[in-house]
Image 1: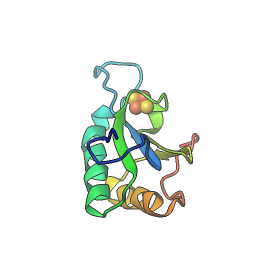
Image 2: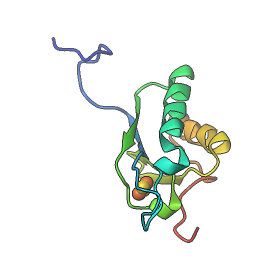
Image 3: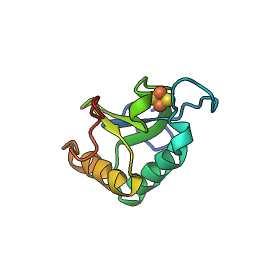
Image 4: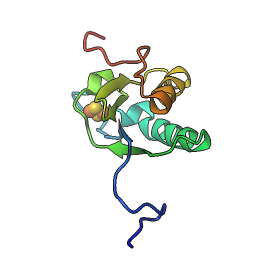
Length: 114
Ligand code: FES
């Protein structure tokens, strides 16, 4: 039987987290998540999920999610909940709670009027 590196026999995750890692030049007309240190935030979330034993979750970098002005942009599937990570020290624990319980965090939900 074929297995992946984690010993699973079927592909897929119970939750998938994408954090935008897109980078633009400083003089671009739109901001970018990379300039807000999104890659470091993505790594922090990934390590924290692993350290807390939250299984079945994949945290990874995405390209531009097109909500650049609201970044750092983050989306969690299958709930399709969008987050705007503006204060990682508060938002990462809130998103971890979502990953642990399946209940979306309200404190950092992306609001388009922000
Ligand atoms: S640069 Fe991150 S959403 Fe566009």
